[in-house]
Image (cartoon, rainbow, N blue to C red; front, top):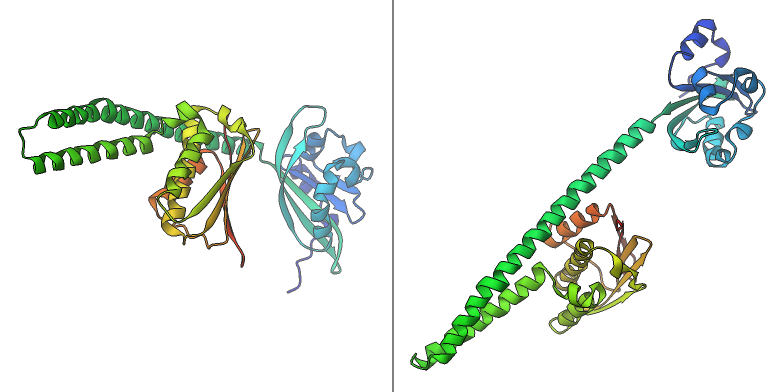
Length: 338
């Protein structure tokens, strides 16, 4: 299919007048990258006059360090292909940048590219709005997580300080009462003991108090030690820095829950084998890696995986999965706010 031929040379005074009324930046560069036209918005963006630009300045000189970044798109349009890309452009003489969406359109003459049209839209407002939306979403997620953690702590306090205490008292009374049938007596005491144990385990799952007493990393190691004693999976853990202990308690709990849910998924959904969990943390950037020679299969619709996704989204992070013939890995990367 023959490409539609357009030519800058056909533009007239009325077209120039219209181009200077638009907020979009318009320009034309010939195949030698010499500026042949720039409208008012384009001149204002770069802080240049028409006399400084038209038939005087070459694109590498105008763009400076940005030229190398734009070079692939310039090559593309001079090869006859339309280009569309986003770019941050420094504001001349001012500390700051503008966000732009650039379009390069080839200009053909006798099937040969003789130059290209440039259309640049200032999308700074849109990008700032996107950031506001993301920040608002993060604030909402943070509120949800903080509220959830607060409700969990209240529930744990009710279980430990009220229900559990009453059960302990009942057990003590049963043990002190020798008039009951011995068989029934022993069975009731065993049941009460099991209930107390279950409540303690539930409380630990809801709010791992070990974090406050022993710290984040030791709590993770204790969890893994308990897991090793109850399953055939060999799960090894390492962390490159103790700096992660300095993050806030709510974020420590969220980090801990991501790891705990990963451990649950490994034990429940993976074949027994050796699994390496590595935590890396430096200047707010956290990375959790799970590597195994076994195939990692996690049910995406499971409660644990959904919880992981929710907390990773809260941290504005991403999950990557890699599978090869020799090993499988899952990586989670996210930023922990100060």
